[in-house]
Length: 493
Image 1 (cartoon, rainbow, N blue to C red):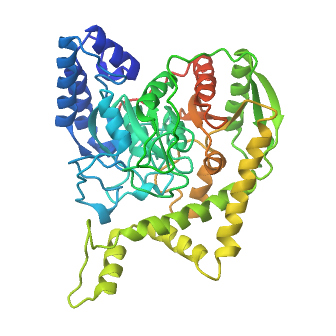
Image 2: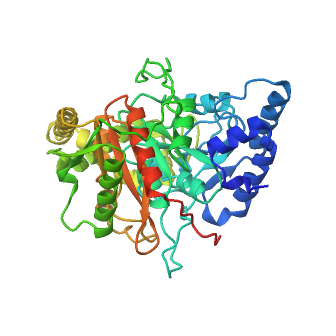
Image 3: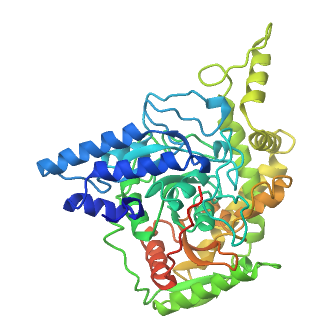
């Protein structure tokens, strides 16, 4: 039998439905990989029994001839930002260590209803704040990739680094991610997998630990475009419990997949070509243009003039919302409580938050509190919101010239652990190409393009109009088919 852990979502779903193998066999194979790859630190909690329980339910349904669901028999990794009933949910923070929800997030509930099973809760940057998965209380996640001729540990991207490592290392065929300013696309790019951030509101935020509520959006991370389309269909849908949820039907994205882009115009934003840009990133962008032309698309130059202001605006808006959202973690209701002897309520708040939050989380809370303070609200937060509007207007104007936008996903390939820890601003620049689409709430995905000279993956980003996930997926499929990218990391763990 083919190694089942080399199969993706579609191959597993269809194989289980056809009786080529059982869902239990699939779950057992992935459970074994999860157990064997603990050194990668991709999982905070493994739940092999949950994967087997879901698999047995699918096998029983098949024996009865019942419908198995869009994800029938597919075990997945769940980013530890999604609340899971009866399973610890920490957001990779000490302040939530030991918190066991008594309810299920809407996204995870949708996936279980579609027939998926849970392999475990995936590691991430603490409260989704980071670009390298080095801020987790539970330790760094390692990328399964290594530079040619080097044994240095590399970052898997962030914040969804546990998700990207799990999929790239064949610990899971797919995983959930969340994207606030690039946290699905950036880790997907640096680990050679595919990930899509749908239109803001397409997937419910209910039951997802909040970072920045006007930006956070769940999405799938998987081996290829088709697998992302399948999983996104299962995840998405209107949720009355989320006031930002889109009340519109979920399209059949898998059925609508087509690599024929005849009649489509693809914009190339001149502002994304920056001074000192990595030559191999630029080369991958050029290849991407050639591939889309070959698929029938017309390439046009466009301008997104406020791009240079997007990153600083994001790092005002996101911390501001974080400072508000994280105020609920105070040691009173759940999670960590640090109560020094003789301490009063304010002392308990201070001690709990000091012990429970990591340095990056504290930094963003302080930034957010500062920009929301009475003397600086108009000078910083109000101005950042105006920039956000201008960024969104840039995209609206661009849609008058093109249907999709092609850009790099990241400014560099994966870099060694700790390389940027001393310079938070340099770390923030990893999101430079991803943030504009997040500020505008647009669908965007990263697909693998090529390996660089050091043998590391580089990704290309496709940005689409609001609600046009189909167009984004189709362009991604066109690139995927022409790039022929099938590289996988050499197993060393």
